[in-house]
Length: 154
Image (cartoon, rainbow, N blue to C red; front, side, top):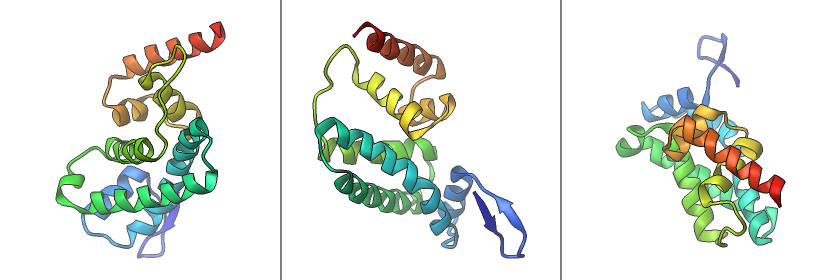
């Protein structure tokens, strides 16, 4: 994500850096954070909506609500103390669970489904997926392997 800093110099900021800026009170960082956050939250919500045959329009509306909730949480004292990836994921999963509830079927567990969504659809790397889920990278790797193995067996 390239942004223009106040001095006119082009800079690159990650979502976590932008979240830190928002947490520190930099309101100008909010639009940049939202631009980076929304596509990933939307992809997650769409994946969950697909499980329940809900429309992508419903998922996109939910994603926007989730993003606003995340921005409000990051701006709060309690939210600023949490790892951003975990805060964003927890907010998205809670909202998706409330809106798109369907029991996980087949051989995959809930964590396996979440790992597959975060890794393959949202595009998070191993470390960010582990932070988001609050588990070790080793567990992410093992659960992803088990989920993919169950797909091959099906």
